[in-house]
Length: 212
Image (cartoon, rainbow, N blue to C red; front, top):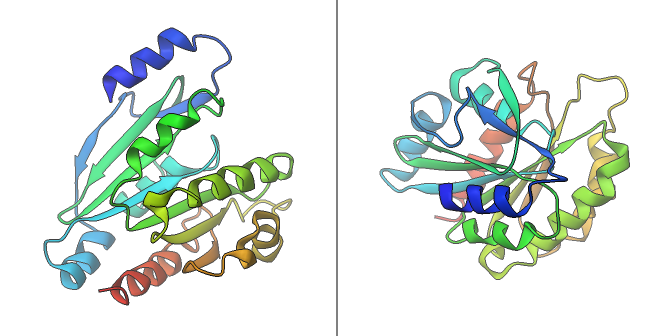
């Protein structure tokens, strides 16, 4: 993981989009309890559920992760490069990606798709200019063989902002109704306010449970 980061920094030293490094760390592993560990322990025993949190830069992925994890907003530090945060609960593993959007980097994303049970796709509800890019990246990911059976949860994030698109608008813009062979749902969320997150995760738990 560190090797990939430095290879990318050496080769793509210019034109990088910012990435998020939580509390100054390039990559970190966190052991914790909370909402997920309680539900997933009773649901899946010791089985590790692999969930990827993906989305464009600035969508709120890291803020959502730590809001769910510790119940509060954690300050993130904008950095230049490529970052993957790994968070391990008792039996649930998250890989949180905040990636540069360059075409040259995208082929490396699939390195983390293997054995994924679900994808949480975070979209900035106010970023109308890049909703098309969000759709393109989502479609490309879902076409990957290793994600064919992954459950999809879309977080229509930043719903506390006045200019936010509605979940229905976003679902149509992302082409979600066309996903006939995949279990999916979209939820209106606000990472900073903490609204909508529990509802989304409760749905995901039930969706994962129905596959057992």
